Amino acid sequence: MTIALAVLAIVQGIFTLLESIRSARHIRTFRPKPRSTRERVAVFCPCKGTDPDFEKNIRSILDQDYSNYEAHFIVESSNDPAYTVLRSLGVTNIVVAGRATDRGQKVHNLAHGVTHADATAGIYVFCDADARFPPDWLSKLTAPLDAANITTGYRWYAARRAHLSTLMRSGWNASSLGLLGNHDRNFAWGGSMAMHRATFERLNILDAWRGALSDDYAITNAASRSGTKIVFVPECLIPTYGECTWGELFEFTTRQIVITRVYHRWLWRLAFAGYVIFDGAILVLPFTHAALWMVIYSLSVANNWVRYQAVKTVLPPLARPDHGWFYILCSPLVALLYLYNMVCSALSTEIVWRQVHYRLISPNETRVF
Image (cartoon, rainbow, N blue to C red; front, side, top):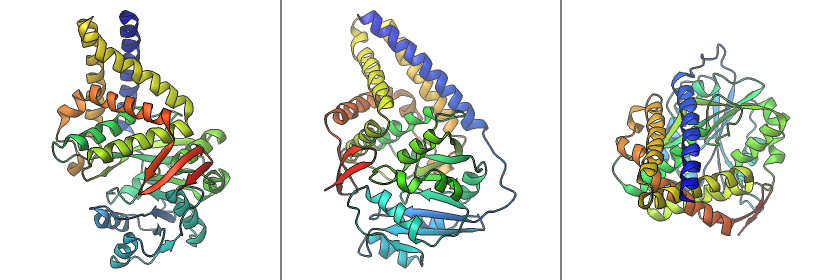
């Protein structure tokens, strides 16, 4: 039995390493040329509450070197602390969306923003208020954009010091990078995503958002149904700064896996099985077949090293990992956290997001408490 477990874990490790090598090659080499014309861009940023770096993050959106864009910020109410900060920064394009009653507040804000912002731009860009965007972000994100695709970046949680729960969040989030690359299986990330307005309308995104909690999974599924390609732009790997507590870590990671269970069930099942195999091998084999355990762990170390070396080529200097040893060696801890998330998501689809309690019924049915 343990030999069979080891074989499964080794095969899985080899496959994962090969996928990471392909992803890393894309991260290091995909550098599309800037657009020759600067088509008008409308940026939509939903806000709820403020984080410690909220003001810096908003300024990074306002200070883009893209010469032809407008930024719209959407809040639930004028009593939201984000509204006050936005006004203090001189922002005038603030849309008040009201409270969501049958979908996620973020989705509600975005849908309300798109329909009420009076935007006439030909390109829609969606972003998160807890990310820090470099000045050339809009230029990079729209460079490979055309009428037949959607472009996306991804989040990088920057850990500035050896703070274990923050490092765990970063390592946990980074593990999904291996899924992104030069292929047709990419997913959209709502924190840095662009599409032509015509694509937004062709995919009926407003309908896809009805009853939804996840803006980006709804877009990913709509794109998949229509055969619209999602292009991952590595230079739009966007840092989020700040530390998290253990409670925030467990809440965030479990929420992401619950969302995956509801919106991408086969991927959730595949990941669940994969982490059962890896965790089982890591926990059992040291006592029965130490050499096989070392092979499995070495494959995970190689996988993490490949990813770590690649992301350093695209992250801004301030966000580059100072604790490379953790990213390279952390697989057993991260895998145990994933397994915890999987078990929690199997037991319940209730989550808390920005102090709002939700129950996910289906991709298009969300109950708000």
